[in-house]
Image (cartoon, one colour):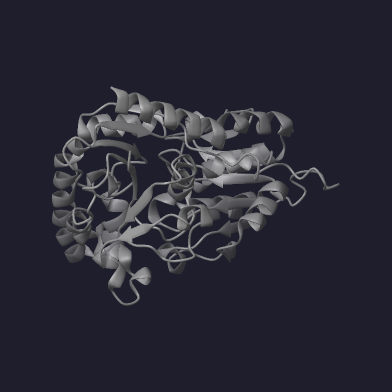
Length: 364
């Protein structure tokens, strides 16, 4: 059986790419199809497989502006030729789920989320306050058309898998399809407490954010909260929001995974101020024994145990998060217990579940 793995784009190792990495391990003879591949931006496990791209790949300097090409993505994803493949597994948060397969092929989609900006988070990305009144009005029509296409092509998938009950609800609402929840993988072998250190975990006494710098992540709330709580804040990540966000944090940019692990291990706590579909960062932090202060909506309610592995915050404001940070800083968490909780989300568990569900779908 010839297997194709489809991913929206390959420009860095975020949560979606870590899912793809496990799929590459489980299907080592597969070929990868994607809109854009920035060479060297993803792991060798991914890059060792044959990678096929769309015409987007050939635009000069496209890695710096590919997000602006969003209106062209539907047409581009439909140009990928999957006619030789019996099984297609897509890892989709944008358009990968809408590839065209040959008759008789099986298509299983691991849907990270229906497109946020086209469905329920338009204002966070393209509202008048962000892009201006005229541009927002034009983009609203573009995103409405994209949402219609997204819904119309949802039937191309034979079975949906997804990362949380929260996203399963969104798939039901926007696609009128059911989805099986398979929690995404956390590398609990790599992310672990620092057994060699003599320092007490959290001795750094700083709060940490590890995030793409995009609107829905609400980094402004984290900055405001740490200012109010009087706690230093370190932020790991890159993205278009950096220029807009105020000072008040130590901006570390993109750093190696080993450095991220070190930061998790020594942080007093890790912040998740945005509403996540699932959120891999809280589990990486918990695998290192660090508590998480997170917005009590979305995927965080499935990964953070309030009062045991962190604190869930009911309001998305600096004041509410500042209060939660203060409580967390004065609480003695059982860091070994936090680690045990994260181990329930291991890569091996994810890979086994995915393989079983894909085989079930093919045989069915």
